[in-house]
Image 1 (spheres, protein in one colour):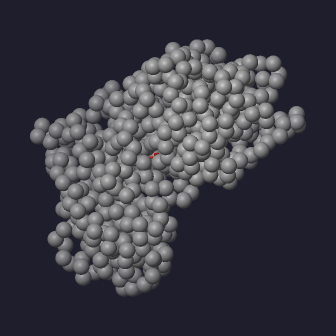
Image 2 (cartoon, rainbow, N blue to C red):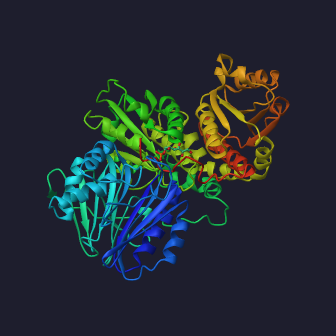
Image 3 (tube, helix red, strand yellow):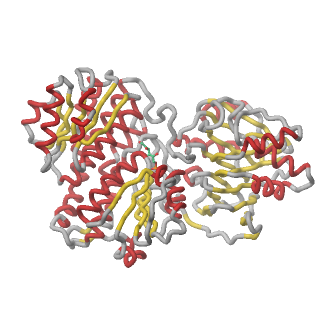
Length: 609
Ligand code: F6R
């Protein structure tokens, strides 16, 4: 969703900020803007559409001698995408400019209060109340920073805020509450951003701000305070060792395809140093400090959203089958508002690629005082969720930039399997074969990728259908849900995932020659049952595309089209099937001429509820 970058220092501030916003483009946005301090005046540049448009505005403007700048990519929440609604927003005198991620929940109330005092508003956004409120306190006699703090105390909701003002030209002010913000400490320069990816090119020394903190930054100094107590905070300076600043597509036409093709490497990275098949060992350093506590856990609640929740569902089967641990997956947005009793022997495991998903963060916050162990399976190193949890295992999939999650799903499933095996500690017969198969899996993933042309042809054949059903049983059931989500978000085709056994309980009514089904029918003890479901669909003239295990000739007689994947253990089939589904969704989007890297209405990192 929205992205924030601010810079103060000797480089061209507008270039640093626009480059930073470019690195955050993958998050999804609909407009972009910049406020640049030049001498005593602030230049405002805003545009609807891509950051490239903003870059062109910068090139056309005279910004020489500028000292600092703040910029923003906006994903519309309050008010349509338009130049007027794009950030930065300013007070009427145009002396205080603000960019904001999050939502100010009580903005109507503040707006009415200010309107009653004669303030006028230009945009429909919630954000505009912030510069106006700071202005109000400045006019009441406060200096800029105390006015900022006074304004913050009036706000309810979630925010990462960055302020620039001609009143104090060399200073940036920022604050954080439930929305990420990181300070990059350079040599005679400072950069603040909502995501370390935006600053990693300039410095690797960072401070992650905590909720309730306010920061004042000049090019050489930073001062962090706790808003509630107004006491200085000693910041922990960390080094960004695991973040790769490379954000290009390489030779691929789209990020999504590049990331799908990273599957074999993703599997290697997720297991590197963790799986020791010869010794029959799984080592998870991230869980070492809670190993004792894990022994006393009798229930696991997995909280996540979207694709991460489907990875969690695969994990649910792993935990039950391999670790004997009663497990359930809850959508984070529902978990937050349920009144279920949770005991101290329940662990809560958050799964998140970005580590910044607002609902998942709220789910973790909800159990803050319950005494539950909070675990994380996170991809983005140093993200909010990674830092909120007591322990966890990183996915190590590297930055994922296409909106549709692909390699992260594969890494999440792999890491969840490792956790289940770690808890199992060699007790099950499947332990060693699974470890060995994990080592063989990257080559099998590469074999699936080598069928891209066949899958592309299949996608072209089915691209013009309006509806699609995905079905599977056991491990293939969450995979069916994930396949449907991938197709709908990339191609805007209505798609539903179902447990194959549910067909007769309703969905079969939809089947006709215009309603194809994607059947996940790899070898498993339940294959015959899935084949019966396929028969039932064919009997109603529904077209069927099947994913099957290499060597299954029989399925050719049942399905219209078959995509074969290498033989693997049932627990690992979701990884191979997911690659097929991802390629299928990708090529359907290509056939329809859609931008699958940035599907309409969606954002990569969903930082508002
Ligand atoms: C779908 C997709 C989303 C995310 C969801 C959670 O392809 O990417 O459904 O999985 O928004 O995001 P994270 O994993 O970042 O918490």
